[in-house]
Length: 323
Image 1: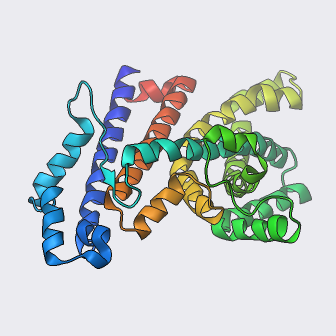
Image 2: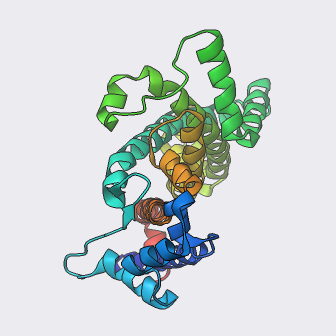
């Protein structure tokens, strides 16, 4: 188990490091650089040179990279995690992320939990009613929602529920903590439905396939031969083993769920990391773009790592297979 955890942790660190490198070097390709983006119409050669000198942007690219990582992880025993300063918001990037991240975690976490609660029974129903009208209908709906872009579904929900029928507000509250958003759930409903609909489609299809594979195993045939009822075979034997791959699916789906959350937040003006990232890109706020991308990457990698660990705990063959 220790070896399994070490390998997964090492892979996570490598992924985070290389994503940070790629984003850092892409940021250097911005026309005019950070100085011109900050100074805008006041950008003269003298002011640009002064800005670059004050912020170390006139140093060689490798020196800038070293300073960036040093601000993140040094000293090792008490890292600062200094992500820089946003000139657009006149705030430390850390404080901006600390304000927005809980809202995105709330949206993604709440949507994922609801998706699992709905998708698992739907997958079981499709197996029980396989090759019937119910199975074909649910499969067709799954394909439709799986193929539908998040911005299109969100826009349709806004038109019908917010503009035409005035049931829910058009956008989420622009201010307030994550807890305040929960206490006013009407503005939280449409973003959650948008994200859930897209996630349920993939989860339910995967659950159906996993249950079908489990029902074809030898232990299921043995249980039937011993006289176990269909209900006991389905819920007492097949379901428990079919749920194990779902843990892996959650980890593999996290990048898709997070990217869907980025789009959903922009459609509903939801004040989370997604909206902050897009606004940072539009404003060419390079420190904020670097910070939000790094944090989203870390959150995704940590979620995938957690799913791997849970899978290894649930199935000993995984954790002992490579040792």
